[in-house]
Amino acid sequence: MKNTAEFVELTKRGNKLAKRFARETSLCHYLSILEGNTRGKVYVNSASDPSFAAVYSYLYKGFQIMGSPIIGTDEYVALRMLFEKELIPKLLKNEHVGEVSYSCDTEALLENMHIAFFDKEQYEQEYCLYTHRPGSPMPAFEKTEYKTLRITKEFIESNVEFSLVLRDEILRSYASIDAFLKQGLGYVALDGERIIANLISSGSYEKSIVLGADTDSEYRCRKIAASLLRSAQCYADEHGLSLVWECNKDNIASVGTAEKCGLERRFTYPVRWFELK
Image (cartoon, rainbow, N blue to C red; front, top):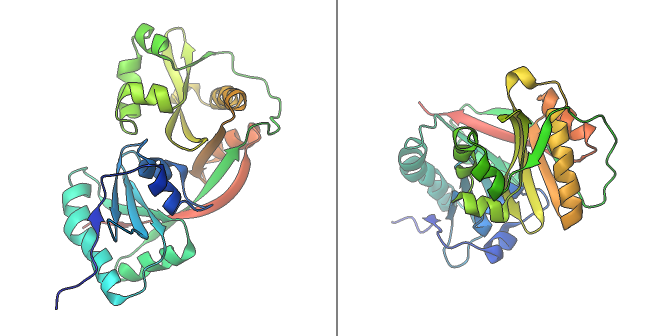
């Protein structure tokens, strides 16, 4: 007998789809993919009435599992076959990804994935999610000595390093630089004309923007990332936006940046993975 449960790729996205799957613990980056703001792929258990989704991020090279938990044996078989027949050979290997990495926005979905891949040795790391809401207190600190600027069309056209340093990074999340300028947010720190650090959004959902920072190794421990984040906080307050900051719980520098800027830790969540052999 043919298995009646199956997963399909969903190419039509939008706010209605994102709202259908949004939970308090859903990650903003993946909601941005569902809404169509950020590059990724969406696989669901029904094109017409989806209740379970595996959302893939080209930036993170991993998945968030979202929606209502599956129950029946045929659904577990379909989920396993989605990865074995479609996602691993046609997506992950083409992206040169050597592992299946995922988070889930409920404990029940974590259990689903544990059961579906019961025969895989799985590893786990804990991540933190912080937020800044408009008007939240912002502790004072001495900012970096280096110049910080918001990434605008004018900056892109005038800075020769942008294409070498940041263009490809932005295009891992956004369909185009114009899409980033319209929907995203970014800042850079400069030593002369050299870009020494950046703070770039990787997605947005409704009025929330998720951000990540990177600083050249020789410029670390100089409050540069915190200064960039503080600039983003001020911009967010002026425009009625919330900011989202996610990091590995063991990343002392990233946790310190969030707490220095007064971000509120909302929750922690596990990221699990198993290796492809």
